[in-house]
Image (cartoon, rainbow, N blue to C red):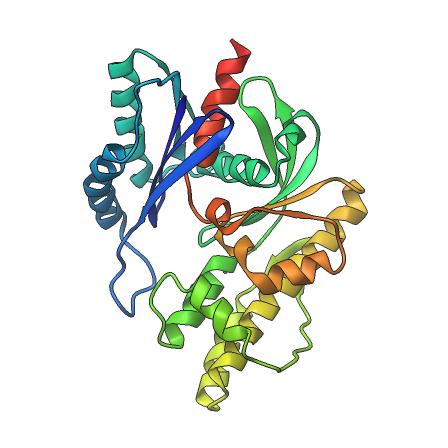
Length: 305
C-alpha cells in the first residue's frame, strides 16, 4: 500500500493506493465569506489541524512507500510554505514505518491523478499534452517520460496574467458566492440561455484573461442576470483554453491531451474542448486538489527499484 500527502493552498489531502484502487480523503480549508483566498500562515495552521484527522481515517499498516508534494512545480525557486506541512507529516510517517519517501511537485500530482482517473497511466511512457488549470496555474505542458521524476514537464503555453481559477473565483465572489466558487458558478451558468461571441486574447501563443474581471464588473453594474454573467466568465475561459489548444496541436501535432486541475472539472470547458478534440478529463474527485497522484507517484517510484 502506498500513501500520498498534498497540502495545497486550499485543501488538505491524503490518499492511499492499494490493490489498484485509490482512496482519497480531503478537507477544504476555510476561507472567510467575501474573501478571495488565504494567507500562507492561515493555510499552514489549518493543514496542521486537519492532517491528524485525515490520518486517523486511513489504515497505514501495510505501508510500502510515501509520496508527497513539496513544491508547486518541479522548477527552480518554486516554493510555498503550505507544502512543508505535508512534507513533515509524510516524512514522520515514512520514518516511523521504515519505508521510503518520494518527493515531487503538486503539479505532477495533479497530472498523475488525472491519468489514473482516465485509465491512461501508460501515457507516462510517451509524450503528451497536459493542461493544468487551477487557481494558481493556467499552463499547457509538454510532458515527457523522465527516468528520475517519472514525468518531466515543459510549459508550452500559459496565462500572462489572471489564471483561470482566479477568474472563476473572482467572478463568483462578485456574485456573492463563497470561495472557492467553481462548482456554484458552474451550476448557475447552466441556467443561462445566453450565447457569447468570445475573442480570446492570445499573445505569442500565450493567453491573457485579465479582461474577464473588468467585463464581469461592467455586467454587474448593468444589472445583467447572474446566470448570464456566470456563463460569460466560463465561456471566456473555455474559448481561451480552446485557442491555446489549437496553437499547440498545430505546433506539436496530434498528441494525447489530458486536463488536470480544479477548473478542468467545469462542464462548459469540457463541452467546448470535446466538441473539437479527443481529450481526457479526470473525474472531479481527481481534478480538484487531491493526493491520489502522490500515492501513485510513490508506487511508480517503488517499481523502479
